[in-house]
Length: 434
Image 1 (cartoon, one colour):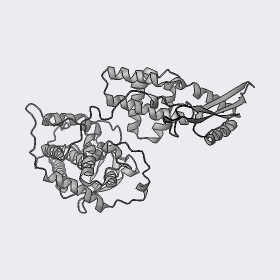
Image 2 (cartoon, rainbow, N blue to C red):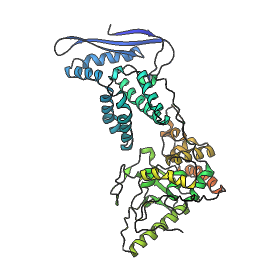
Image 3 (cartoon, rainbow, N blue to C red):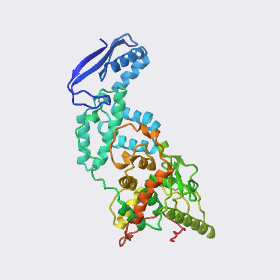
């Protein structure tokens, strides 16, 4: 029989996860002749249902009549982990995900995975090999969160290989190494900490980025790419519809074209609250003064229409924001956290104050808010296609949060002796305090 049933003690579900229960699985065995007339057999094991096995059998009987396809199947079964992951990066990640994600995944694959198991045949990769790799990195002092990222990338990429039937099981899902996503991760800033940080950077280049990141939950690239023509101070709204292009050169003076947002869900209109409006107005006034200063002193001002910009109008790069934010916290002696964690803080604070899970997700530009709250959910967000979160509800949720920040009684923190809040190199330009 081309399709045969067998009993296993620990059956997998449709997603390839072990269920811990015994059950029946189905194997496909198709006999065929190659181009040289030699008798061969194509075997794939472990189908969850008989119907799935029969469909695969029918598909393979047709494809195996094509000699070129036979060569492809044989080569895929014999490919190494390195060959598979490089191909996966180009055909899946590069095509379907953002350039930043592609760059991150490529670094993980080339720096951590390939040096250890790259030469292993894909079909012979085992959970033991991966557990040894994880232990090696943990013993060397690599952060558990980084090792967890490596494991997650392997799990996703190998699951694609399993679905393509290059492998029978996903080795990354059967590893025994326990890694917590919260290890060494600082909790998000609460309302009082957010107010302290915001007031402590008043009249510096950090004021608007922290307002937009910590009180609205914008991403770094969205903050750096927000332009004034998308801000409507008369109607108290602004639109997040674009972002600064990925890997913009550090000395870029004029941004010719912005990049689209991360996804369609990321495109959103947000309200400018009574608390936030003075920050926007002050920023606009500062930039007008900088333009006038440049004109009076015969200096070039690069007008990119950016809300957050250097004193000469050139863009502030997201990588600079990330790399220098730690120095801001260090100078102010505030708890260490990443700049991106301000977005997590905005999500957490809005959700705790209102309980409106869905609206917070819409404010942050998420189809599902789980990622920003540090949760792990596995359900279909079908309702997101039919629920219309209107501006009025977004304003209510953000207003509650901003009102709490406004009411918080905190004192601005001054930089510690010998430390300063970092700012971009200004050349002949000066900052303006109001």
